[in-house]
Length: 363
Image (cartoon, rainbow, N blue to C red; front, side, top):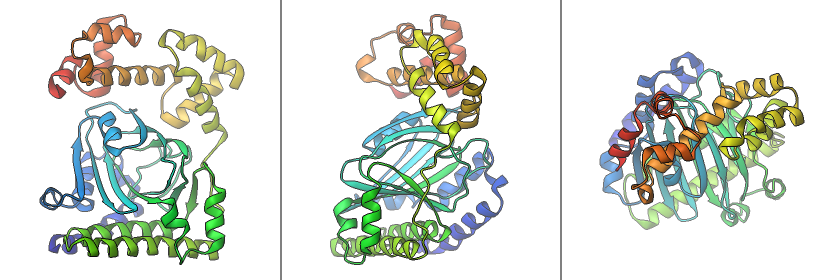
């Protein structure tokens, strides 16, 4: 508890410095380590208390699985993966903090009975957009039950998630009826609410809640923390409504829509990738327009993107215990890599290790 209080000013200073000087987080792995040290509780705390789930991960797919729900990650940038995920469940509320040192594509479908509120601690300069739109840290993404989204997130970025049962939110006595109606009208469509005050409220409430929960004062105390967190979120939403700031943005652009449509066509059978790209070019615009959409969204061309996805699929098969007897060559061929030398080169460039090293290390 003392350690958390001591570091509280450091957290606030870190967030202020990063927001004021985004160049601090551009490709800086050292800063990523510092961010984790400031924003995550100590290992001594999380290992002592069974309400915390805290793991450091070496594979983005494993991080997605640990997150829970219908979630699929693809590592877009090259190199060894390093991530950390902290989760704490308090009744109807689940708080998560997630860090990754790489650019990721996150395909997510939320549970049918939860709202999710997401914000970032720091964003690097926009060599890639989050949600298809260049953004500062002054936003909260509101995701209703069963929402589906494809998020493209920068490297060395830490995200805060608050998942709340829909009934606990919509039936809260302090929630304005107009805000309740607005939330229900979202249906399955996530929106971005641009608000520094709401984003800061979500960050500060998360930190305060983790500090309190780290004291391990018992179930009644945890219930009080949950109630305080929900009340803070509800009042924040009420203030945004009263400020007439609840219109929100779906985070969509023509380039993003074109990327998502072409992506859907490309992620078919590997032997049809070239043909599907030509088909996408006919249906969605010229080849140059499609290539520009991919460049804007994922910083690579469509065929390179398809290769990264196939490499990721091969990696997940190498990590699958049920496929431990399958040869690496057969797995590569299943994903359309017929040349062993070329597959190994691509794999090592993308993940920072050989396929055999992945199987040996995780096996």
